[in-house]
Each structure stands twice: as C-alpha cells, then as structure tokens.
Length: 254
Ligand SMILES: [Zn+2]
Ligand SMILES: [Zn+2]
Image (cartoon, rainbow, N blue to C red; front, side, top):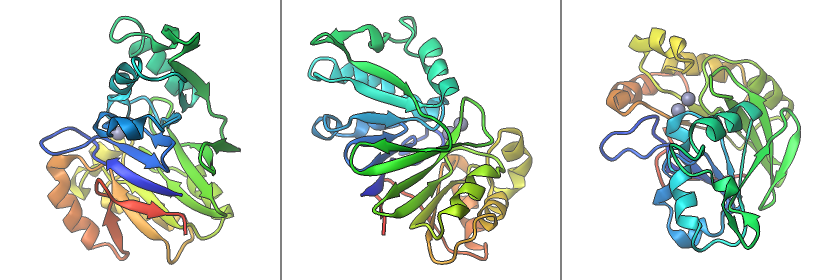
C-alpha cells in the first residue's frame, strides 16, 4: 500500500497541480487535480475521500464524474465529514453549478454515492487500508487522517492551522511510516496563515513537535506556489529534515 501524489499544490498557477493523492489504486485522497489521472487508472477508483470542501481539493471531482458517466457501471463513493459532503451537495453538484450526479443512474445505480465517514474510529477502505478521520482546525468540514495498512500508519494533516487532536491520536499508534503536513505560507505571512487556518514553516515545526516520532520521513505539501521559493528556504533552516511532496512521489507503508 502506498500514497502517491498526483497533485500537491495549495493553489493554481503555471505548472501547479491541485491536491490529489492516490491511496493505492482504489482510493483518492481529494480530487483537486484528479482529471490528470488516465482513464484506465480512474476506472479502478472506488472511493474519493475528501479532507474538506475547499475548491483546491474538490475541483476535478465534477470533471472525473462527468467523464465516468459514459463508461462506468458502479457508483463512485465520495466520503468525507457530514459538513464537507453537505457543502459539495449544496454548492457544487447541485444541478446548477454542475449536475447532481447522485441523481444520474446507470444500470439503475447512481453514478455518485455520498458516504459520511465517522470520526475517530477506524474505517475500512478498499485495497486493504484503514482510515481514521480526525477533526482539524480548518473550515469546510476539514479532517486530517491516519491511514493504516499492514500494521503501519501514515499521518496526513490535510489543510489545518495549529491543531491538537490529530497529533494526540497519532501518538497512540507509535512511530508512523511517514508524516505528511501542509505548509501554505512563509514565516513572514504567519498572520495570514493563522487567519486562514493554515501553517507556515515555523508553525509546522511546532505541530510536528506535538508528535513524538524520530525516524519517519516528513513530507510537506500545499504550498501557495508564489511563495514556494521562500517556504523551501525556510524549511531548509528547520532543525529537522523535511521533503517536498512533489507529483509522482510515492510513499510506502513500511
Ligand atoms: Zn487547500
Ligand atoms: Zn482548505
């Protein structure tokens, strides 16, 4: 089992791909740039697990559903918190901005099925992986996740400002295989990071200190592309090794 970045950017600019990760070949985490995935790979996907309903995480959901209608015979299950799914239903797939694919049936089944994921319990996902959804400090029904496969965990912050519960719960499961954390702004924009419930390198460093781990690789994603150079320099100055999670990078549960 693995997590592989399709897109890892927190906004759209030249050459930037919005947040979307493959969790094995049957689950996507977010769908910001999901339309970049080839059709034969998309056809294997059963579940899109949303961290929250902000546009950079859901943009391509409508477009992959649009492309699937003509060739798919089973529903695509979209999972997320109740608040997140409510926003997607009301403001995106509402029959106005984009079709309501939950009402479009193929072989008497809807092409889209919404499923709320419960918080703080392990939920089985397709492909021999479990997920624990944990509320984080960010709007739009935001959740961070623990993923577990083969007895190993990966911690995934999603979008968040400074938060507690995700790290507290993650500590209970020991040394993770990897930690994937958002960093959106440089330290000079800490006030904007705080106001928008995001992190800068210094804040991310504080968050990572809340998780007692030693050897796991730490990956950073969700940079605002216009601040990338500055953020990378500041990450280099931290007293810990962090790697940018670039599209195509695969992280194994080991
Ligand atoms: Zn975002
Ligand atoms: Zn967000």
